[in-house]
Image 1 (spheres, rainbow, N blue to C red):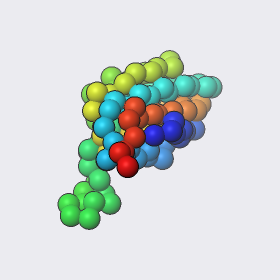
Image 2: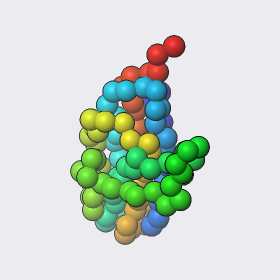
Image 3: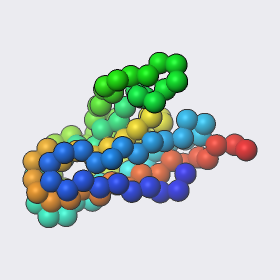
Amino acid sequence: MQPRTTSVTGTGDSPWVRFDDWAGGQVGFQAVISGTVTSYTVSTTFDDPNDAFVPVAVPTWDSTLTGVDGASATASGYVMCVPKYIKATINTGTGTVRLTVTQSLNAPL
């Protein structure tokens, strides 16, 4: 997977980034803040509202895998498994969080 970037400015959520179900590997991420961000979170979910068989209307988001919860500085890390989605949330502040993610493997052809 090529690196993908999403961002959020002011309080709220960034657009979700979807990972490749058919590719394994780790997920790397980097959240870069600019402006005044006093608290932000990087969360993942294994729920999929678009699943054809078991859609989940309201996904459960969790920051345990990323370890970025209530952060106020730029952070990076990796997740040992592949969730369905990842997002950044600014809890307090008026600045911007730019979240860049990559998945280490591609789906086999």
